[in-house]
Length: 474
Image (cartoon, rainbow, N blue to C red; front, top):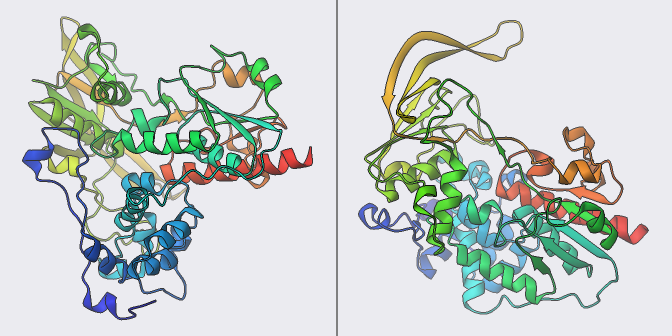
């Protein structure tokens, strides 16, 4: 710890976002970067706490005090080495992680935690820019073969760790390029897809084989997959979005959030979408149903597409601003989150339940919502929702359902493999994410349910550890 008093003399400084009028005209990343000296000054604010709650809160167990100190001392390569000992892809998490570590930082008690997330991506980019990130193929290649199904953060993490251990790894991806929801679910204005390409190319140079446009269970028979590999890791995500089956759901103009986001990411990539299939907010009044990150991504995308108005509604109460007594430090604070997309033009409302979609000529024109109230059940202590009877109509000719996911896609692949994944109890985390089948493991959303990128990476690491132990014993 080079400067033990920096947290008293150096204020938290964020890089901030690009100017609003500039960023809403393109899909480039909205976050800016600090210069080298400012970034090192921010790292100096880490107090190297006796009990590092940042380390405790991070699903990956990143050693924040150690690499923050290396960054402060200008030893960027050392900082990257410490960081990647626990985090395979800091260039991803440094962009899209909600920074659980910062919320538990002791300095968060004064609302000025260390800028850990921004420091993280700065270390990663410095490492890539100065060519300190080079292919590191295993020194010894083993004969055992492992198939990873799905190339999202969990699949990439599992593949990376298994390859480093010397196993022959093949990753199967049903879409046209690797990345899973990192590529097709997260907008470019949060994660430029060249960042994914850069990492995938590095992993290929290290010996991992990527096969895209192949859906296991459809294009590749499960029995062939099992016959050709000694172990299989299922990283198929949680691809079934939560639906809203109310009157008028069939109307044109009502879509799942990922239908918009996946298509727009492909458009940014240069792909041509037939006009009759194009989903666009241009010249439309948009209603986003769901108040999470995916809903926020829909807001930012709609603004860039040229929406006339964007409204986002949430069935839960509005979170408190600043502090929430029910989630005290060092727990993750359930407080109001305002994203860059929200700042770009969005009306946000809470305590509204969607009752029906109304339309004309087969297309949605408005949505009827009803105000709800939440109370605590005296018997169970759980919150319960009550409809108040107060309804209103919101004008909308494009509705985006962003209400999360319910479970992984099991049709075909999982059933044919004979694996039970429908309940978490069927996956042994303590046994390296092994499923009910000895040679089949699961990671990411397929094992956890829909969760964070950082948790998916950790789950992939755990599965890789389990697979390695299994193969070395059999």
